[in-house]
Image (cartoon, rainbow over all chains, first blue to last red):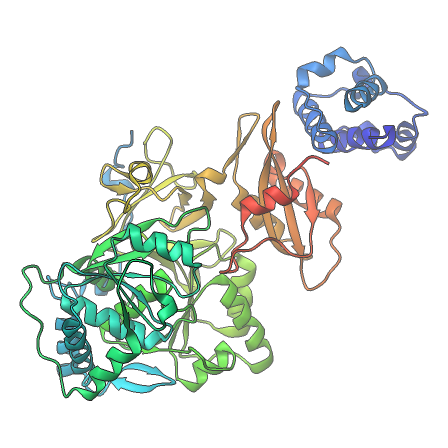
Length: 88
Length: 506
């Protein structure tokens, strides 16, 4: 599974969780291209948004995460690389 | 453990006319004799074989019974019946009832291995069939055509020997079996009489039911019509649309599945609506509000949507004024006890989804040869069909799918039927099916597959957003657009097959 697909799953999950920041096209496109990273702290996700992110990742990649695990990653890029590693 | 709701939570009674024909132990043959006296000129059967009136029917049945008795059938026999002609099937069924012979339908469309298993489960001792190929290994075979011909040449039949228990003849019925081996229930003739007496009034109707009499519910309805003194219209082998058949035979009561209802909409769209005398009863599966509205707009103003089970027979139907987004199946009949309960057995509040339990006169109390399923579904005098339901404040019954189909994601109960209702309200979606993707972390993640409406393009993202706006956390997390959903031979979408086909993570 390529990095772009994994980043798209993350974007879908953030949208489903109502995380407003990712709806800014400039930021979203840059993140999808791997040019920009975002910290989880700046996304200000509540528990439901974290759940939606985990669900979207699992449906797209088959990698199962619980919301508590997201705390291990400082940025979305780190999360994407971890999933990419697990998909190999 | 369940407990009964208190009396105030019971549903109101209605329509006293349902009680007007209490069977009081009478047999079907007794009823036919009453009809022969009171409504001799009313047709009992109408179809390509012509008209058979009530005045003649008891004699025809008794002649056939006499020939069958000569062939060795009597109390203690169990007949596996395969008759492709609907009229012949019903005549044979009536003759077997009259003889005190147990009967089970072995459908001609079923594969030989299933026919054989059903014959063994019901303890069949003989096959009464159209063709030598209908025979079951190890059982004698009686040709139906031959006994029918013999009965026609006989002047009239004599009464069967006195039976110790009139009304005790057993009839075996099989469910549709979409989830595995079909369940089988056995009814005494007197049970079936109770079901017939509880059914909506058909005495003044000419009834067409396109599903073949070999289907459990069709056979029962055909017998109910005769119990009540109505007219069975058989459409078998007749070309033409349902609308055309209704017009040609002056049908006033049409019973269809949602699939046939969709065909009816299509034919009425090109040929015009049904006569305003025709009531259309749709049942056997969920009837989406979009289909109800199309039927009402294009086919009939007299649309009824019904709910019943093989184990309890008819339970409820929604009248034309009751069709709205809740997709109610209406007020239960006066004969039926209907309760919706929580997991702890307490009565659910109005609008709250719980498990439905049912009690009706003459209901089944066990399955034949399936003790485990009997324990699961028959409890404390109730039948638990495994359906999720709620009652509106008006007392209307609404169904929310099968309890086995309910998904739990992160502790949230999610009902596929609710998802499907919402998706089918989207203008580009014709049919939807929702199902779970198993997740180690979240339990079951709801996803859905949809069929486009009239060849439209479906924007899955837009439909997903539409569902999210209406369902929130209970929305599907992925939507697959497919040309055709998997269906069983009756046209019902098979959820488990959809889940197998589309449910894997990408």
